[in-house]
Image (cartoon, rainbow, N blue to C red):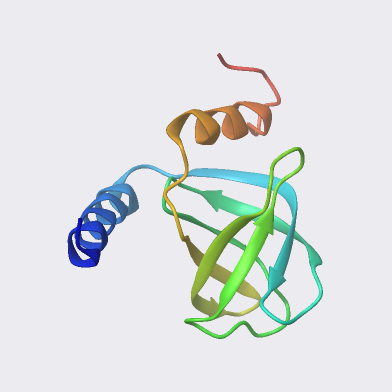
Length: 115
């Protein structure tokens, strides 16, 4: 499979995902930009293709970072934008829908578990 086909499918999936409803959440996490120490953050928005999180220090678009949610391995992402202490990042690999749904179930605003 050529790199172009892989990117094309990812772009299509991420574009479809961007238009899907996003769940506003507050998940404590760690974020580490390449070459820097990890810092505590809060993920405010999570989708299959990426997330937005608090990042008081400037993060540069195009740079690589790793986001770690409680109980999960670090997920590699690329910074897409940074503005007013918030960073938007795209996952290197789309998040599994099962993992995504499990995370949302654990951190819903009303605190109620939803299967």
